[in-house]
Amino acid sequence: MLLRTLPALLAASFLAATASCDDHGTTTDPCGEPEYGGAATDEAFTSIVDGEKRVSADDTKSVAITVPTQSQVFQRSAPPLLRWMPGSVSSSMSRLHVPASRRFATRVPTREKSPFAWVARLFESEAWAHEPPITGPLFYLHFTVPGRACEVRVLTTMTSYQVSTAAFDAFKAATGPITLSITSAYVRENRITEGPYKPTAARTFTVAP
Image 1 (spheres, rainbow, N blue to C red):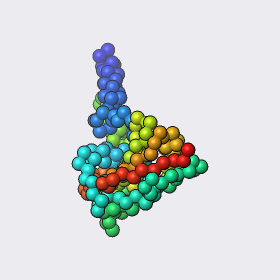
Image 2 (cartoon, helix red, strand yellow):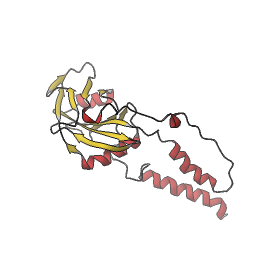
Image 3 (cartoon, helix red, strand yellow):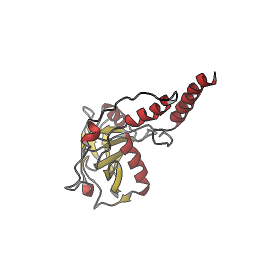
Image 4 (cartoon, helix red, strand yellow):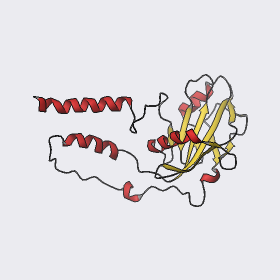
């Protein structure tokens, strides 16, 4: 009887642990994950969140936002395309790289040799579900929206962001100017090797009533 119920107990314990923690063993962000753009992944998100604890405000190394301009007013007719110059984290050697060996890898099932082999498969499947690690510039956009408890956040490897419908709805409902700040870093295999940096002053904009 014990042998029959033990797998169920182990599964319940595993599910309870993953319900309160994310894949990296940390408490889940109450505001959820950001939007992802380009090749950005949740593993890169974990790295940049940790990196922001030591972010440097440095205009010589951080991004230079080109759109929006300071106090720019966007029309409500269509979501805007935001752009920035990447700064020092995008050098001639900073091309985004995803190893081909991971991109095209396949997993070959093996014969189970133990009645508890299914437990190992749970952790193996979870690890396999992760995206390939990235190497290159990473940009973390923070939009502080008056009247909204959580920021609108975007993590991307691109140097532009086409505002999503959901984000634009939040911007249109803002009770005041929206503030944009961008944290940038260079990651190698998802680990920050340069930065993170941010501008000394954030950029503000509004959406026409």
